[in-house]
Amino acid sequence: MTRSSEIYLDWNATAPPHPLVLAAMAEARGSAWGNPASVHGAGRRARAVLDDARAVIAELLERDPRDVLFTSGGTEANNLALAGAPAIVTSRLEHPSVTRVAEARAAAGLDVRWLAVGELGLVEPAELERALAGTPPGTVVAVAAVNHETGVVQPLAALSEVTARSRGRLHVDAVQAAGRVRHDLWRFGDTVAVAAHKLRGPKGIGALGVKPGFVPSPVLLGGSQERGLRPGTVDAVAAAGFAAAARRAGESVTHYAALAPLRDAIERTLRGVATVNAAGAPRASHVTSLAFAGRRGDELAAALDLEGIRTSSGSACTAGTSEPSAVIGAMLGRERALSTLRVSLGEETTEGEVSEFLGVLAKILARAPDASGAG
Image (cartoon, rainbow, N blue to C red; front, side):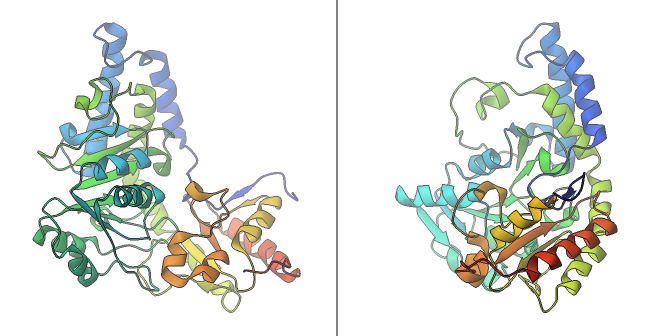
């Protein structure tokens, strides 16, 4: 590595905890370490912190606090939203916490329908209407508001209308959307999943917001916490950090919107060298998915990492596997997926860091490609 500090351009994998989050957790750690389910003083103090956090998350999700369930993160929230569905409609664009549930349910004989997707990575309302034909009431349509790899923003208002006409239930995975894009782009779900660490909160905690009267089917069995729908002791300290992150979500959205010129500068500089996946679709302003013909995205990410620049070749939840991105594969094929590098910016990304990234990348690309190529 050629520098003493790193350049972090992988904010879609996780975001560094905000100082306000760390301060809130430090304060809660001194007083709210008890079990929120206990009725003694230590438990009541923890319960008060938990109740306050639930109210803050409910405001973010535009729900009543009674309709917010704490989970271990976005993955569990997505699993909980899909549990008990009579049928599932989704696409290969989704996070593994959705697609793998759908695959398992299909293997068990459940009606699972996969939406066709085109090169732009958009879920089209007409395609959803076709897929929903003949499905039973309560069928779950699972769509991520903002794609975790391409940043594509889905047309959730239209998808919500189609789902409602078919008496289905729209589940919105808002893990990559909350605190990053305007609320009106992801507010349409009957159920909505969020994760604290994407909001610069702590890892290990998330939430599922549900519509009034809807009772999810538990995926875990145990105690009566979270109304018996999600057993296990909730960490009030983590909840305090989650609340601190959620309180600044509006401010965070403003910061992310201001990143568009930096994202555009990356794509403009690399024009003719890389192809932007989903360039013609509406996208969040902080992420770009770049395909380098004849090169492997994972090898480029590894080379950049050696120089202290952190990027990725796809979702962090599939890191360490030999398979290319299923998202890019579904849109554009395996070869494009193999050659893709994801760069995701965040609130602390600077123009100087982007400039340095581009300079280092140019030097890496000038080297002879690995003999394995992109195949």
